[in-house]
Structures are given as C-alpha cells and as structure tokens.
Length: 253
Ligand code: ARG
Image 1 (spheres, rainbow, N blue to C red):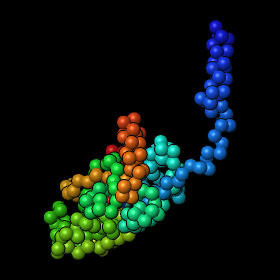
Image 2 (cartoon, helix red, strand yellow):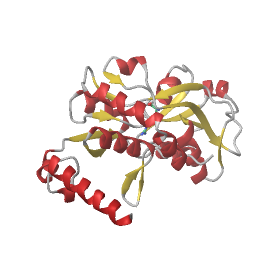
Image 3 (cartoon, rainbow, N blue to C red):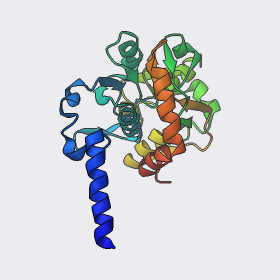
Image 4 (cartoon, rainbow, N blue to C red):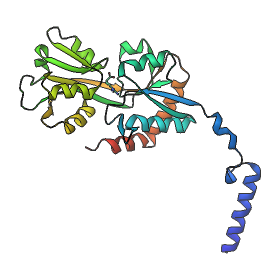
C-alpha cells in the first residue's frame, strides 16, 4: 500500500513539474529576482514599538507590517530613516513610495497625500515627571512648557494653546530627555511610544487621561495605484490574524 502511495506521489510530482505547476528545485524562475521592484518606506525610527533600532536594524510593528504587505504584493522592502517632518515630502516628491511611521490620518495631511485604511487606533497622552505636579491634567497644559516631536499631531494640538510655551524636538526621545532634565513640564506624544519612553526613564509617568483619539495609516502619493493594492493586502493581513500577531509581539500588555 505504502509503495503504491509513494509511486502515485512521484508520478504526480513529475506531472506537475512538466506542467510547470510546482517549482521543482527552483530552476524555473531564476532570473525573476533581479526584476523584483523595490518599494521605499519613509519612516522615523525613534518610536518604539512602531519603529526603532534593535542591533542596528530597524524593527517594530510598522516594518513588520510593511514587510508582510510587500511579501504579499511581491515587492522588495527598503526602509529609509529620516526626520518625521520629512516623510510626507519624501512621499510627495517620489523619493519614497510610501510613509509608515505611526502616522496619524489628518485632514491637513490628506491635502498632500492619500492614506490607506487605518491599521491602528490610538491616543495622545501626556508624560510628566513623577515628582512635579505642575501638570496634573490636560487643562494644566495651557500655561506649561511643553515638549513635542516636531511636525507630529502632538505638536499640532499644543500649538493651539496660546499661553503655552512649545519646545519642538527632532525625535520623541529628545523631548523626553528634556523632560527628565526639567527643561519642559510635559511631553505630549502617542500612547504606546509613551509607555516605552516611561519604561526607559525612571521618574516619569503618563497622566491617566488621554486627550485625543487618532487613527494610524500608511500614506502614499496622491492617486497612487499602490493605495488599492496596499488596502487589499492590509485587509487580508487583518483577516488572517497577521496584524494581531505583530501587535502582540511588540505590545505586551
Ligand atoms: N502619530 C503622530 C503623528 O502622526 C506621531 C508620529 C511620530 N512617528 C514617528 N515615527 N516618530 O503625527
């Protein structure tokens, strides 16, 4: 019986080789590798758990999701690290094919780029020094010195506060460093990165009331044909549990 089964199997494999159904040792498509199109992703890799350096490599939820999307669509992913406020220009000028950086969908940005469907909902939070009680709630921001990452939604929100003094930094970690040195009273930043920053900086804490809800999505050039492809891949990765799995890998609680 076993013999018959294996004979049938061998025959089947041989037939599919001839018909080109199986790869049969990979001799068929050897030269297609050179033709794989690269997609450049613009990001700002100082934003754990979404993108950050680990052993000199950029890792996190966004690179893994981008890799899964590129694998599905047959592109080679290349990650370009830059200032956060350079990402949209990189995309609009074609230097990058898409931007993925824990980027919030806003009407202002939509004037310049298109966004995919959202892949995460999150909040903006306030980080303060544990010992300092100048800022106890969002209302106290009105008269505080506030640190933000330049060009982020945190920056946009606090820029509306007429009496507040705003210090803009290149990265989130720079803003948090200024907080630990007492140069600013509070930092306004996204919830998950805030948790990572507080974990690394003893004596800081997140205030309990988050004050703005936001959606993260991938941005692409206006009318890019890639957007529909990305949305299709994103939908499948949500459905088959890949997105949940990647989130669970980087967000432990
Ligand atoms: N969600 C915020 C925004 O879109 C902050 C994103 C910052 N991302 C980063 N990779 N540094 O403005």
